[in-house]
Length: 47
Image 1 (tube, one colour):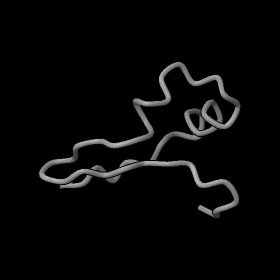
Image 2 (cartoon, one colour):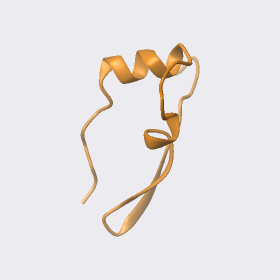
Image 3 (tube, helix red, strand yellow):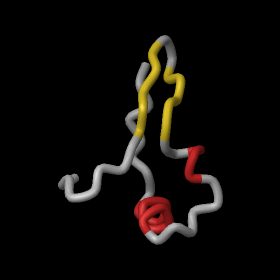
Image 4 (cartoon, helix red, strand yellow):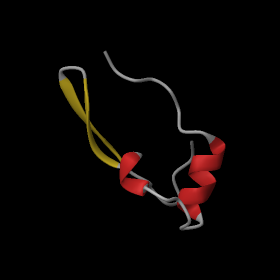
């Protein structure tokens, strides 16, 4: 089952400003159930 929870606005803002304490906790490869997902920031891409 995939985790459908979006990142909080505060976490997104902290990532964008380079002040998030642990960006790899949100971005990169993560195991979700039986599958792997990769989360990334894509500059210029809409939500």
